[in-house]
Amino acid sequence: MPGKRSIDRRTLLLRSGLAATAVGAALAVPAQAAATGRRQVEIPHIYDTGNWQARPPSGPITMLDHPPTYIVVHHTVEPGNTDDYSLERAFAISRSIQNFHMDSNGWIDTGQQFTISRGGYITEGRHRSLEALTGGVQHVMGANVANHNSEVIGIENEGLYMEVDVPQALWDSLVSLVAYMASQYNISPELIRGHRDFNSTACPGDVLYARLPELRQDVADRLGVSFREPAPTPLLRPGDTGEKVLTAQQRLRAHGYDVPTDGVFGDTTRDAVAAFAADNGAAQPTCQACSHAEERGYLGRDIWELLAPR
Image (cartoon, rainbow, N blue to C red):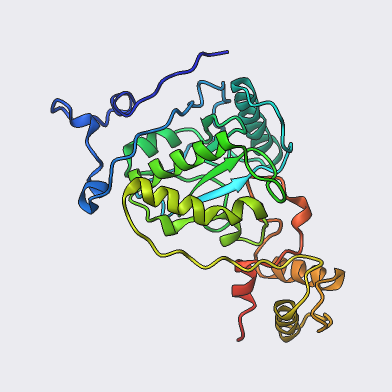
């Protein structure tokens, strides 16, 4: 097993050929960060694809000549919440995710750009993501948020966080990584989002999603900036009841789907939502990088937008 590689900003810039020739210039704050007066954020320890013995990608990696707009938080769901917090486990889960994405999904590489294990170890996901992040001006296009992959940089957090909280080590690494991303790419904390803010999925889990305001504030404190807290995204699931369900049912009926208007998200409404999503190109489940087969028929932001009154 490779030993821990201490990667600092200077080493990464020199390795990727991005260091300036002037003495000390390699440690300069990125131009976009300097222009806004933000504090510089140090890079956390990140293990690259070589450290965890990643397979080579099966096709060319797309390097976009612009930074991402959003930082998106996910949870892996499978294989659940292990008590193994070791570095070996972090490398193993990275290999497992890559194998699933390449062999089962048919993708060229891991879908997300970075992964954090329950032990708090950060690994590079898709090849060249670390190179792009340390450069601060380019973005590796992944496959983790349907219809938005050119806009987002995704972080998978190992575990299932619907009912339990993340381990403290994972949380600390998440704050450090997101703060560094926001610093490098000049991203406002309000643009740190959960996967459900884009697609009809519970990802990154009810508990972790509820902590995103805390994450945004922690990142803002590190950057020394202020921001406007975004409104949470409404998500309807089988078993829900109330006025929002009734509104969804009425809109489904307006689009020609035979559902009751009783304000109860039952099987008929779930099937109609799934059919509407398929008919309108919003494939479900939409958590591309995770395992969320149980989410068929969820109604989130992308479906709400399609259901808007004509």
